[in-house]
Length: 120
Image 1 (cartoon, rainbow, N blue to C red):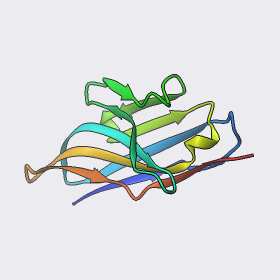
Image 2: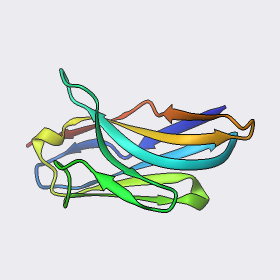
Image 3: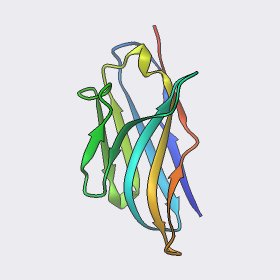
């Protein structure tokens, strides 16, 4: 069994910063891509950023230059540093990871989400 747990969300003023963390645990053999999606009320879930095991990253155009994704492979952890936050960044942020388990099964796993609210 594999679990992803996010942390670091909260309420922040426009222009502020937050750092999200996502820890994967359980019967993990290998983790390929890790990333973050977000879903705002009334909108579809969208990709924010993703990073491969080799640390190649890609970003949504709306967050380029403001958000940075990173990972610590030894800790099975991904991070999303969010700077210069805007009200339109308000959403539930979900971590995902493409994981091969010790039973040699490969799947995408998701966290339960963490709320980020940008408001004055």
